[in-house]
Image (cartoon, rainbow, N blue to C red; front, top):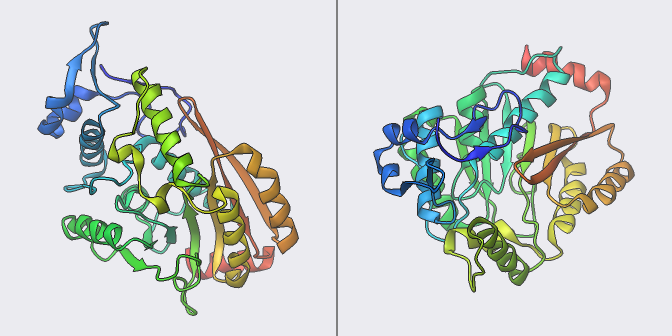
Length: 316
């Protein structure tokens, strides 16, 4: 196989180990061929600094591995790396398996809430395609909601399995979304981690510079992202602290709350707050793709007796 090397630090069940097979992917999506070229080492590759090329690669990956007939995002929205996003799903499955006799529940009975599902709808797509889980995706941006609706409308495979809910209040996370009679086995979130638009733009410029080896004055649109995708006042830590505070109000509605944590220095304050609000269990799961290291934090308020009742009632 020829293509770009992906270091083998992904979850062992992740389908995207090793190199991208660009020849096979371009057979699945012929439009990808226009972005391919042979580099100086004689390997088939594509320009990973070109947002259009990366979007075509994502379309090919989703069609090839997950039977996604249509996937697109508007200009200016983030183009997510599929291998890393899939990793979160696999680790969540392992988290459920720890509470289910070592077996990852693969069923539409599993109900998952994706906070900030985005224009790309990537976590619900992957979670449903891999494990048949049902999803609710919450989102602030009307434009992102419209994009996600278009993806659903053009993929009959996901009809009735993924629900979109607008979040009308930018100061809320779980409020307005989780209804009084609802239960979620998991929540997931890839929170905005920059503290300002300026910091987000610098991060995007750094990403392009690392990919191309050249300085850039301004990152291309798809590497810029929207405000709610990339930055929030106070950054990642403030956002996650708000999430933890709100989770206390829904402690009997969710088995495992989870979030990605990009900055390692935020981990200790997050763990301390979880202890203060009285969680019964919390976990840190390390993740990595290439040189990018991350981790997900999970917490639950359910006692052992409540967890056993939850499994009997929802998973059997």
